[in-house]
Length: 376
Image (cartoon, rainbow, N blue to C red):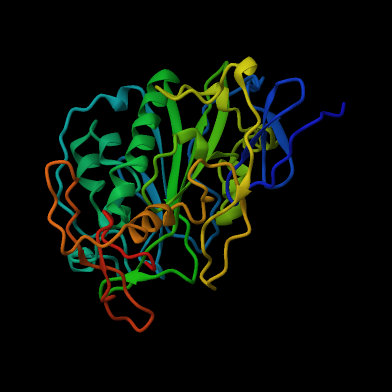
């Protein structure tokens, strides 16, 4: 059956929404596939407990490290984990122990890891991959969540904003679905900047994949988020697990029966998950076609980005971090003007915490909340 669609070119790592001529909303993916936004849950009735289901596919050379609350695979080049994985149950969301806030090296990591000195003055948070709030059920698990092997450099506005919001949503889903399998990590590549004397890579993106393997509503979902502040709602970053695998080169939930894995990982059923105050599935009678526009972002080569986006900011997911920079750059200088009662005081400017290609600290001044100028 052919559908008359308003088709938009999808942005990288995400999906676009379009509306059929009959008024139904669909999600368009970068591989040219589509799904109804209000698809029903997967019809999988035969499930049994699978030990180690959360662990991505590994090779004989991989040294998987197991801790009380999570497992990880450490990347010696980037000085952080490729992934952390664990099952979070409803009972484990009951917090018994408070944060320790004692960051220490992981005794099970044999290679160089990160230390306090790497993050000091960097402008980045020591961002948890396995959240401390998921480990409050055990004093040992809580303490081990502060190992540096579980840390990755995250922009403060990201770590304390949209990333925290996603972590809280995962705990809600663990309660609603009795348990949920979680795999989280940075998107690592050879072109990343680094911080500290130990050269800790700074990821541009983070991912999280989730599996609810409890009947009757088996479902999976993935997320890819830029390491930057965002006012977008969580479901805007939702993708298929297949999309995350394509980006990272990892194979998630490989222990699933092949027929189940194929269906679960290729399906992104937004309506199958609760979203708090968000409303991802609107009344079809009120849906209007969203016009896509060319991204306002600028590439590293200095050219305008060619991606199409329906984001209200006008920036695709590659360049969403440039939105606030553009606003700040377009403001008139106020250095010689004192604010009066009817004017908003200007944010204090600080030296950019970014590092140049020559390895020196950037000398530009910025008022951005993340402590970085528009180039960094």
